[in-house]
Length: 201
Ligand code: SF4
Ligand code: SF4
Image 1: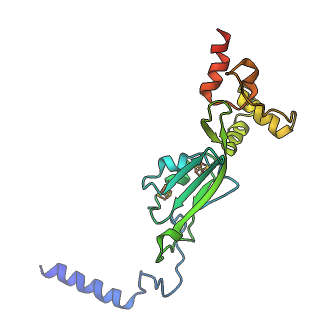
Image 2 (image 1 turned 90 degrees about the horizontal axis):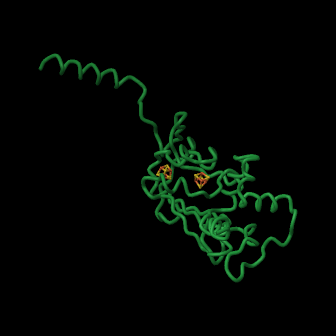
Image 3 (image 1 turned 120 degrees about the vertical axis):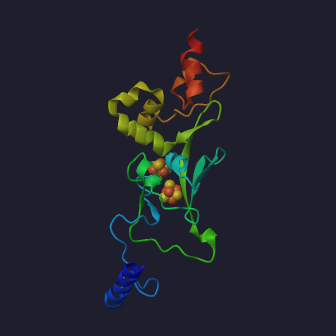
């Protein structure tokens, strides 16, 4: 028992004369070390609203609400529920939609609702059945990622048309059931299959 006590006494004397390891934060400034996992910061230019980060978020801090009437997806990021695990950054499909800050970390507040941030993205909706396909930005991202291979999909031809403005009146209403004439409309995979396969039988 004698030796451990002496060792502790030595540690206590060294600590008395050495610089404290702890910082004076919040009384003083604190500069986190590189790679510190602070607040997730969204990059609006690189986030396509794809929903992947919501699916991997272990604390359900990221949620989405799709409104097919307005055609808008609202993304809620509740930093009061965030555990700063970094999964959203790690799995972001664009590689830059969200990054954990190593500078912004002090989120203490009296009203947790002030910690909720929102984003909005325009939805891509099936012109036949009204199913939500994804966001327009997400589809554009897939289109750019695939390059020329994207044109094997009719959906991507629609996006190309939108970008190049080759035709103005592609928004033709689908009437009297799905026909082959409707194949260039924005269709979900189910309705696309009906046009492609069932109409051929
Ligand atoms: S995974 Fe990335 S691109 Fe998709 S919604 Fe999350 S931050 Fe945005
Ligand atoms: S850091 Fe983790 S808990 Fe926080 S929003 Fe991202 S995935 Fe969710």
